[in-house]
Length: 212
View 1 (cartoon, helix red, strand yellow):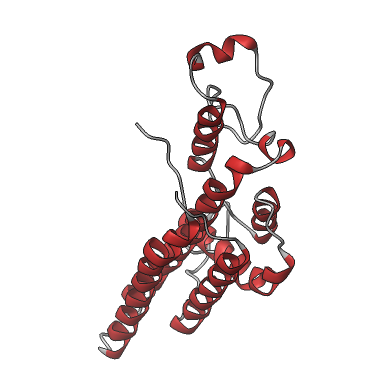
View 2: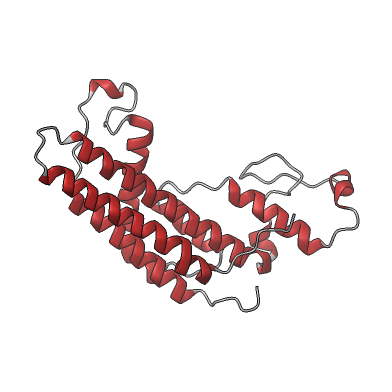
């Protein structure tokens, strides 16, 4: 099986554009449900909650592809934060012992590095703006030009956590003790626009890869 490689710009023009289109469709579907005036707004709101989850997964996929694009040519400082492929999935690398290399005899070092990066990417989660900045630093991407997007993306990520883990309620310990939080299409649309802007600015900052 060939190792997974990535040109971020291929992703922008493909997967990301499709993901953003799906989010737009969900927002439109929610507005249609509201316009039908069936009395219960929760079905329309649940469609918007699905859009939030979709947006967050799209953000994480951008970062995964950024890592696949940048980390194979990164320096030792960045690569030392990536666990060795033979170790259990973790974001806390441990020391490599000589015996760990046995199953990689005859392989190129480049392939071992790429396999380690692939496994690291598959366990990646981004849950707040601070983690997003750390991801950009690891990929050696200046984060200052992107800072205008961090506040809305942080709100997006926190709302996704609340939707997925707290039934979209504010009480973490006993979600059923709190009412479901309201959600509206304008807010979700603003988060979608922020993610789209972040993606476009990021891809402008990262050179395309030729011949991958």
